[in-house]
Amino acid sequence: MKSFMQTAILAGFIMLITASFSFAQASAGAQAQFPFFHLGCLIIGGLIILSLKRKYDRLYLSEAIGSFALYAFLVALFTAPVVDALKSMIN
Image (cartoon, rainbow, N blue to C red; front, side, top):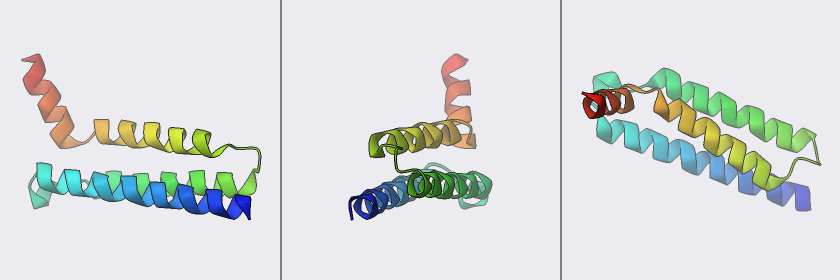
């Protein structure tokens, strides 16, 4: 039962972060520039981390959440609105 609850919490966290990523990207740029590839990579990465958590019982919930949070940060870092913001800050 404990493993099921941890998997459910992780799945909820993954859905929350993915939804916030989609909302932030939709509000930051035009609809023609929505990063569908990045969203797909985020979904696939979440599914992989979720399956690893389900397969290996010794993987802690905090480790899985932390690894997905860092992965989401790295995916968001390489989207067009963030790259444009970094370019404008450098220049």
